[in-house]
Length: 291
Image (tube, rainbow, N blue to C red):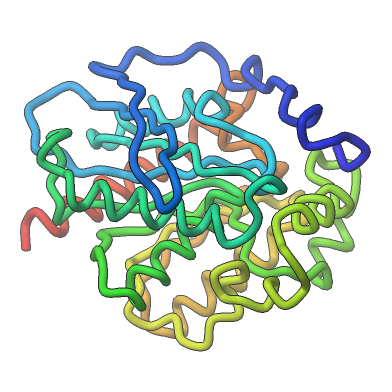
């Protein structure tokens, strides 16, 4: 991928790995306002009577590729299994929109949902953020931004093999540098397109692992993959959250590669991870409902 232009890289189609999309009671494409424009969202509403809990979902793709279709299948599965509305966010991509645009769009989307919850049958007290890879990075960053900028308050953060640090010095980066789908060179390419300069990489809104204080953040699920360059930084973030007193469920899927979460068409472990995530969300939402 690092030999392609972003435009060419965006033409990749992984839909066969995702499998057939499940039926969801209602799927609606819309747009929401963000600073300087508007962005597309796709809203999945499950069967039943609202108000529902909700998950704001950010797709992966190194902040450069990926879109609503990339994660359509897992978003449908999460909506059905967790019994929640899923709002999938098509934040603006780099290099056309460099850091911090993706983070700001992602935060704006979460605030929009909190403020407009009733209009899409959502309970504003039970909103989670989540995503995979660069989307896991954005979910973690949105949780940080919300804590520091006065809300909204989130029930949970679901971080699937998240990018947490602008660095390439972990064991998993050296062990899994090439040969397992996501390579070190591709991550360098992604980061170079996303950041304006190296200084940006030290910003906790790009590298949440570098945040001085992780206390007071929402409970978290952190899923990592054994054969993933990002494995160690995801697990380091889980450990730092735990050390800060945040309840964390951390699971490594040993035999898996980066990206497996949106490959349920070909991988049983993808189903297991999606079910684990849905159950964790359900538990977090129910804990608030019964408070």
